[in-house]
Length: 170
Image 1 (cartoon, rainbow, N blue to C red):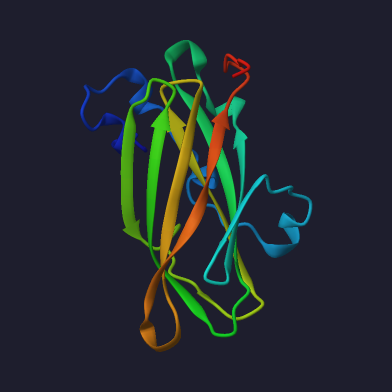
Image 2: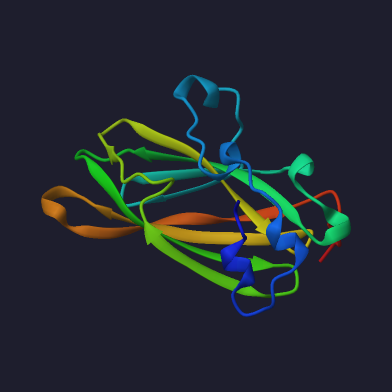
């Protein structure tokens, strides 16, 4: 059972931390034909690599009364360059509505370090729990290009908003 490891760091564990995370939301890959109907909301291009993101609040996996909110997000990484690239590592900065920030680093995504050929893309889905009804994620991927040269690719900041988010006009 998933324990919400990154949320527990720096605070005591609560009952919310013991809620199970369905494997389909944790590390599910999306087949190319399934992604056609999805509408990406956030986009950034760095060094010829386009990253598109679509977050979705998962009400059936959330427990607002217990302070547990869950989002899935789908990311498409498209190689618009002339040489293959390989995703080596990921970095996330996740901030909840209370301003608490956690940084997550690790190899690859969903257990993979895909090689993306020119003109091709790699799409995956993952998830993010928060103790507040909204938050924001931003990050980067370290990629290896021609000759193994490493470079960073931006993942655009994207909002994690739930129906419980209090909206205001700034």
